[in-house]
Length: 83
Image (tube, rainbow, N blue to C red; front, side, top):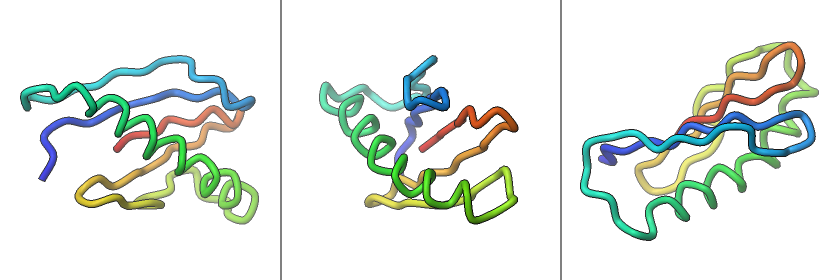
């Protein structure tokens, strides 16, 4: 199980506003790129689900190995994504 997580806030135009990687594991040099790739791939799923559901919290929308992507969508369509 991964002991690091990546948190990203994305604007409604898919522009990253804030990004943080938190955790206690030793950082691999490719871990940041892996998290970004997984979160970027999940954006397509979020865009499809955002218009078909009234839920603001979308739990476990995407998985890659032991990383699970969850999203909170604000009323202004700002995405808070964590994996």
